[in-house]
Image (cartoon, rainbow over all chains, first blue to last red; front, top):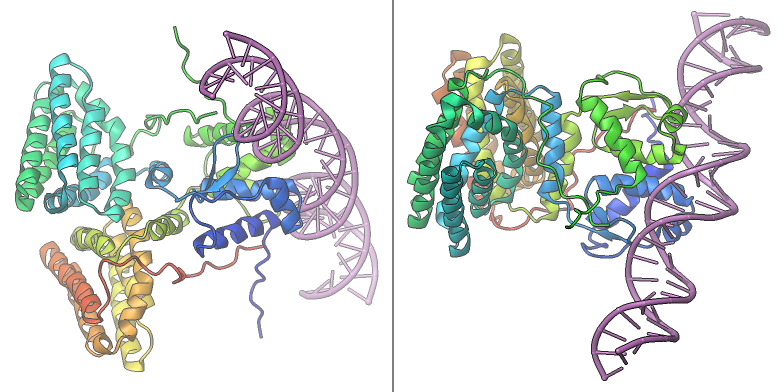
Length: 255
Length: 255
DNA sequence: ATTGTTCGTTTGTTGGACAATTGAAATATC
DNA sequence: GATATTTCAATTGTCCAACAAACGAACAAT
């Protein structure tokens, strides 16, 4: 006969697993303050240092959070916490623009279609404001990329599907550098922004009308335009993305 | 004048960021062995303990790995490392079956369509074997769920799109418990498996023919069936998923 | 050829210590 | 009486020193 491998875990891992289990079982709820490091060390019967290593793991997985120097509390892991890590994984796997685009080609039009039936007045107003701001930015010659990214996030949020939101976020984060290069390129910088804002406008109109089919179709066209621009700019669809291009920097944590 | 907030980070975070930057910049490649903790502590001019906390962070994000008790080496973060955390985030956000299904309704048919043009003989054989095994399992009255999950992963892999693979994995992981309940339910257990295996068979045929449209359409039908089964079983589409249902357990780490 | 032994290296864990920061209570100021 | 200011205990972040446990490799013993 054969024995199964023993599951021997280092103490710090046992610590993090134990706390994690309490959170997932609902005995610790979001917002709850955890005991201090010293108390945890006493309760578990280990050193404070070991507890700290366990905390680092929980922090990284988003289950607990700490505003530097202050007490630890239970948090709900949020999309934004995980998306950067996914993006990084894709960069390291040398994912190509084509792969990202194919996924977006599924998710973005679908998000628009779902949004058509679910959007509320508030978000519709935000979208209209976004389109306005985009046109102003074009007139002023400013960068429209943050506005474009914001537009797509708004649409995805309006779709009322958190799984969709989570699936598309790491992908679109990686588009950022590609977009930058695209709108700086002479061949696409002239006509590109105008086509972009027109598509955005049509999508917003369709959402206002509650017309899912039209919203989907214009989003599709919009995505096709994006890819065509990439082609026109002479960029290689099948090349790995530029890993050096930094993702949008997070604001420094409050301390 | 006013100064911007200083980005003061704890030392352990600086340590992990520094090593992370070296990896992302390609100066440290997958497989490379990192210096020992003591050496790192000396080089950075901090305590070994601080280094260890930094390492916990890197380990958690999948950038470095250690087989317990042994030296640290650089690793490529893999889908499987991140998907469980995404799934957990969705559970905690009380994501509904409907949300998951909507996303799968986009990604699965699309995966099938892409796979039609890209699948190789080897994977096609694997898919055929999977369908065979599924039929045997039905005849034997065994659970077909692991086989179903494997089928969809095979199709997604055949699509040759890693971004797609990454996007769909956390979603389908959450389907697992739903599938379990579905196939145990008296109303769906009779006809469900037969329809499932027929759809799988049609999809494989379409992939063999390189017919993207047919592959997409059968996958779509297959997904619609899934949802209908959920309805028929009297389960609520808009209820949060069961958080207690454990994801497939990972094998204990080698030690 | 397998099993034991030894040894240097590296990780895992512990203990105690202290500076820096925080939150809140206590005090002073207007 | 309300608002600053100061004080102070609590807590985190970091350091130093030490040792047990596990590993890899080399070598001896059966």
